[in-house]
Length: 219
Length: 214
Image (cartoon, rainbow over all chains, first blue to last red; front, side, top):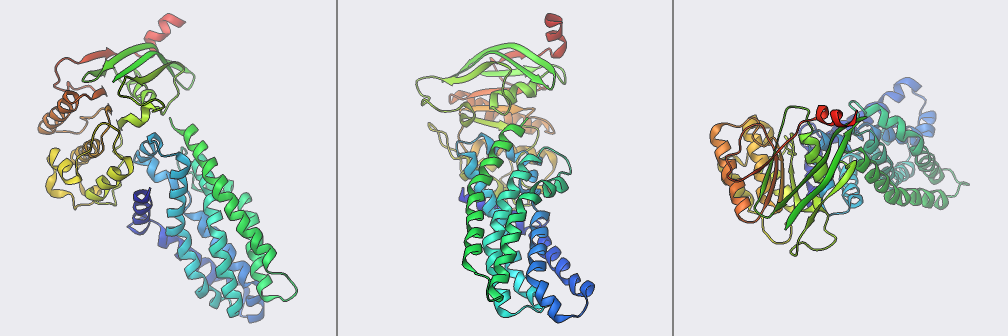
C-alpha cells in the first residue's frame, strides 16, 4: 500500500502528472477576479474567501478524472482489482495520494492568492485552514464520480458534473467558516466541526462507493 | 493444485459468446486457447481472472495446498493486451512497485527486480523510463512482472504479440520453467508457444453457440 502511495505521488509530479496544472488553474481563476471586479479593495476583501474557495473547488475537480482513468488505460486497474487487499483500502490510498499531489498544493498556494484578494491575515489563515480540512472531502467525493465515469472516453466533464452537487455542502461550510473567523457575531467552531465531519464522513463513504463502481465497471 | 472450470458461459452485451466450456488443469499443465478473432478467447480469460461474472458455471482452484477462502484471482497473474506499466516511471520503478504491491502467493517467492529483467534479456536498461522502450521491449518487461511476484496460475492473453523470435524463445523457456515448478498456464495465442504436452481448446465463437440455441 505504501508502494501504491509512493507510485501515485511520483506520477503526479512527473511529466503530465497534473499536480502543477491544478495550482496554475487555481491561480488563473483567482488572479482574473480583481480585473473583472475592479480595484475596490473593500469589495475584494469581502468576497475574497468565497473566491479562493470557488477557485480551489474548480481546480480540485479539474484533475479528478485522472484518478482511475490512467490506471485503466494502461491495464493497471485490472491488476489492482485482482489483489487480496480490500479494494476499499486501495481506493482510499489512491485518494490520499491524489490529495497529496493535487489538493495539498492548492492549500499551500492559497495564502498568496489571499493577498491578491486583499484579505486580512486572519481571513487568509482561516481560508487556508478550511481548505486543508475541506479539500480531502472533495477528493473522496470525486473518487465516486471518477469511478463511475472510468469506462467512458473523455469522461472528465461528466465527473465534474456528477460531483459538483455533492461538493456544494463542502463549499458552503468552508466559506462560512472562513467568514466566521473575521466577522464577529458568527460562531467559528460549529461550522468548522461540521466541515470536519463532512470530510470524515466522505473519507469512509467515498472509497466504498468508488470500490463498488469499479467492481461493476470492469469488463 | 487443480484449476477446474465447469460449464462456463459468458455474455458480451446481448450475445452469448460461448457456453458449456469445461476444463481442468493440474499443476504443471497448460491450456492454450486458439480460435479466430472474436471467438471469445480474451473473454474466457477475463472470466477466469474474475473480471467478468460468468453467465453460467463456475471456475475454482482446489487442492490440499490451497488454503480455504482464497479467491482464484489472488492466485493468478494476468497479462492482458495492455502492459500495466507507467510510461513516466523507469522500468525499475515499475517492476519494484508491482513486486511490493502484488506480494507473493504462498508457496513460492518472486525474483528480485534486476534478476527478473535479466531473465527477459533486458538487464541493462532498467534505469530507462518505460515509455522510451520499443513495443517488444515493453512486452518483455510486462512479462518480467510475472517473475517478480509468485503466482501459481498464469493467465496470458496474446503474450507473444510484438515479439521477435529470440524473445519468443525466452518466453517459452520461462513458461516451461513455470510449468515444471508446478505452475498452471492458461494462454490465448495465435503463435505456437513451443511447449510440449499442452492441452488445446478450440474456441469456435458465437456462430457455434447460435447453431445450438437458435
